[in-house]
Length: 264
Length: 253
Image (cartoon, rainbow over all chains, first blue to last red; front, side, top):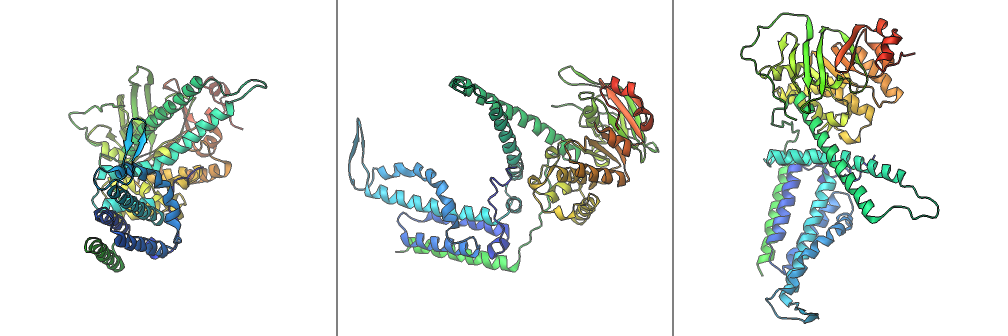
């Protein structure tokens, strides 16, 4: 019904799509680490990172601006770094008074904030690219290959499978409520706020109880097929020569980015 | 829900028997005190296809959960001469293929392949053997093209067929299905009927679909209020209007 609501995988025939999922996961982690390690104000290195990202975007055939468009959704999270602007180190740029509070933005603070913004913005885009070019089950396989803790990868796999079932369930509940949310002519429909809050609370409770019962049934289904506490899976991925070649290229590139960032 | 299995101190010698399933004096009460099964006894011969009918709440699903030891009541259940106890549990679960009513409960892996491979992998088979079994199970339900599909992209009818494949891949001796035709459109139901007809396995199938019973199952067991109230040839039982109506059932056309 709403099966494609969260699935961000876009099927295309490209080098990035064909790349082993492990390489992609490690590249993402490496790229994020590299961004995080760059010093504040390493503009040239940031630009190099951005070009790398654009290049990957282009190779994936999703279009140069694909990840940029999707990254805007993550922008509000960058606001968490706003307090960095008012870092007490550095020279004050201005003084703002709000009643009894005084805020002083500093030059070093602004530099730090801009750097954090760029770092997170680049990293988020790479994550978006990973999800768009890799089917989710392959991502879970990659984590398993990389010896990610089994219980965590299992939880992610279940989450992925049942997120869709749960959303469907939620939509059905909402629809059932809407179908009975009638109004008479001349009266205000919808009831009192408190009453509506109670209805919403009951619906959340319903969802919890249903999910709990479902988890019981799923566990029975797993036991029936021989589950004893360890999830076993077959992972069909093997590293090809081209995967190794691309991984080493990326590793070299990340090292070069670091050098550009630190040597001035 | 945690229900402990009775551990038998000594294992009974393996009986050579052509009875695939033997249930003797089975009693079960849920932890809240509600009695779900009372004095249930029946046997299934090898190759027999039997329908289990009865109103909602009759105890059909509870009985099915006993057949591979998910629930354990008082009484005896043995599969191919092997009594169900803690020690035999892995072997029992490999030989009883239990398919749940809601395919969203049965299909819990991200892809179809992984779901069908789950049973064989947990039986400790080699990779080639697992792949072979997945292939032949998907072939049996005519779904080979769905190997790499995501479970949440399937229709209900497709999910039901894959759900059956997930237990066929374990090569069970007994197939236990809980309301397989519920919620299917006529075409999907017809496909399912052909599938069940062609599978050469011992089967116990719970259903409200008496037309399906008439078509597929030579023998019918009626349950009501936690006990078996009738057990015999479907032709006789489905003609007995008084019996059917007494237990909330309707004679099929």
